[in-house]
Amino acid sequence: MIAATGLVVARGGIPVLDGISLLLEGGSLTALAGPNGAGKSTLLAVLAGLVEPEAGQVTLAGTPLWSLTRAERARRIAWLEQGAHAAWGLTVREVVALGRLPHGDRGEREVERAIAACGLGHLAGRRVDRLSGGEARRAMLARVLATGAAVLLLDEPAADLDPAQGFALMRLLRAEAEAGRVVVVVLHDLSLASRFADRIVLLSAGRIEADGPARSVMTPEAAGRVFGVRIGTDATPTVLP
Image 1: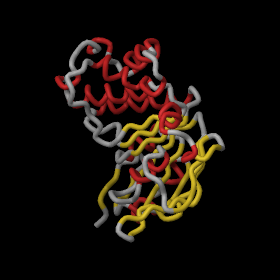
Image 2: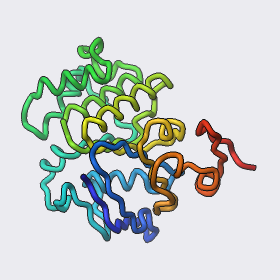
Image 3: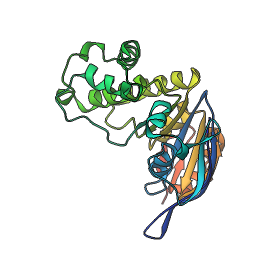
Image 4: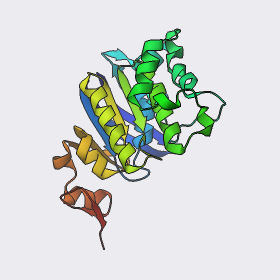
């Protein structure tokens, strides 16, 4: 369980997060949605312990996040940054094995499980810098899974993936949540968020606009107010005049 209370982050005197509070529990897939500049990536970075807020606190299973060492945080929280990629001449298996660095072991079972879960078995020996964008993205996701962390924080993991791969990714993340992990994902694809997330936290201008199941959050009123679009029954957005 990870809890945030009264988070405030400002840049140049302008609030990026303005009093954010939320509780994230294992067994649930939570999507952070909202327009560009809403604070989604910043919130994820604060939850990962990568950005320290000006005010507020984050606790992990009741322990203040900033009281943990970097190594402890890395073992318990795995973070996939937006646009993460590997430009080195490492194989897929070697990149995935980097997820075990915080544990100081090779974790061969965890590495092979992550490779299989991401459908990379046939590419395990290939250099990651010679893969397609979608394949490389899956390799970075497998690195995150290989950590065995209880909390997975992923910023736009569906970027560079075709529709079939996007669906496969979200099914995989749902399975990780159902196995008991805390899974939080930033998504711009509202249809993916509505279809797979147990909970959607809708952000706007650094504040929580709505929080709850997809049907209660992605209403026409909220979508129009936050995105300037109309949401249909299939969660397809249409730009408002």
